[in-house]
Length: 400
Ligand SMILES: C[S@@+](CC[C@H](N)C(=O)[O-])C[C@H]1O[C@@H](n2cnc3c(N)ncnc32)[C@H](O)[C@@H]1O
Image (tube, rainbow, N blue to C red; front, side):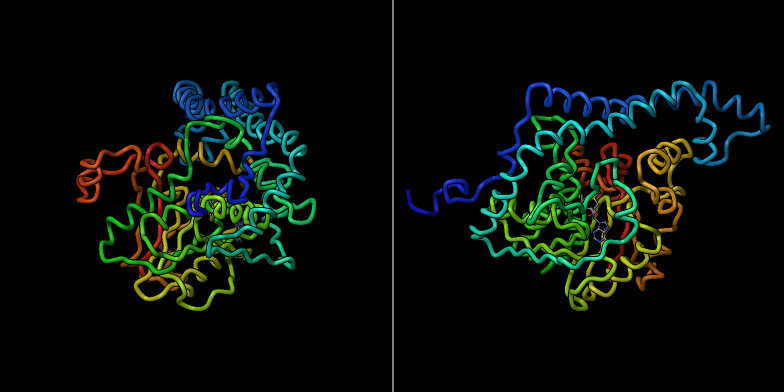
């Protein structure tokens, strides 16, 4: 068989995911915790809302002579409600047990994982690169707690060239078909990229940067949507970058990964036409967000676009939804969620240098939920996208 027809495995590029193997009980545990978490997040929360309307709000009104006036007051009022406590307990424990359920399999496979990633990198047939910074100083917002109750957070390394932390973060996803939930978060990149391409019809980016790219799952879409665009993914944590680089090599995609604090990167001024991020800014302090937005302004060429997919701000969400989102700030090791959501995102953009008249804040449809006809209607402003996390994704950003 000629070389060009060899699969990546046959060409000597191993797929690190293929090394992940759980026992029957481990796999069942992973499925159970994933399903429980999804059930709590997608279903039980509405029961909490029912409890709130039926019992909690009337009790609050009897005591204060008025209804709760914001999400924080609702969350405070829910605190002693038995159903809310059950919901919180399910969510917290399912969240915590998820990584615990994959850690034994990852500990067994870690040496082979690390070898497979080294092997993939040594067989790099793509134009992609990996730049790591062994002297990286991690901000306190990263090292001060285990993000999402995942032991080791994003950044921990236990051996030279270690990817085990990346595997722990990926664990549920790779543990089996639909082991986590049926939701595919890599659709964020496809959905945001599709919107940008369809809305800004003149826009032809030469280089895109995905900030806080982790292993790059939301970056890859841009290569398909904008053929020929140069793909860059920056993240502060090395394990997922190594893993992402190996996966990109395995999949034959050219990606430039680099380990950088996105508050201040080493890319030249105006280097990018498109800067995106997803699930990033709510994880860092508000001051760090200000720094990141200033960095976006510096890195964008004139006419370039920045689009961050994020949680919608308090001001555009109903109070009950704010209480639901801000649950994470109190109970899920997401201390910046609430502070971030209380900001005026367009004001943050203008403070960073962007022109408010070219800024946007909107929900875009997940490409899986709208038919082509509905998408046309959405683009014409005739219908709105579904709410964030329920068929739509909230984005904010600006054109420079
Ligand atoms: C929730 S993950 C988001 C991953 C990815 N963007 C996605 O869509 O799934 C947050 C990421 O932010 C990264 N991160 C946190 N602070 C950072 C910083 N200052 N600079 C670069 N990356 C950072 C973490 O290492 C982690 O990979």
